Length: 99
Image (cartoon, rainbow, N blue to C red):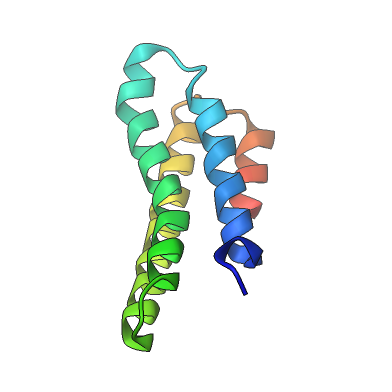
């Protein structure tokens, strides 16, 4: 099985792209403060899945999946901050959090 065949990888890639598309529309202050943190966290989910997939030893693979889960938690925090700061609408917030 290839990395690109993993459903969790596909979902994390799509989430990161959706986050990026939202943030790119924000004004510069929010883009370079909250936005940078949010995009970095969302990108890190799939990046860690990918890095773990490429590791030879199971323990290395497992550790990167834990890192990915941590990045997902961080992403959810930044999505909540974006919502609280009125940078995203309630429906966008709900949609992103559901993923």
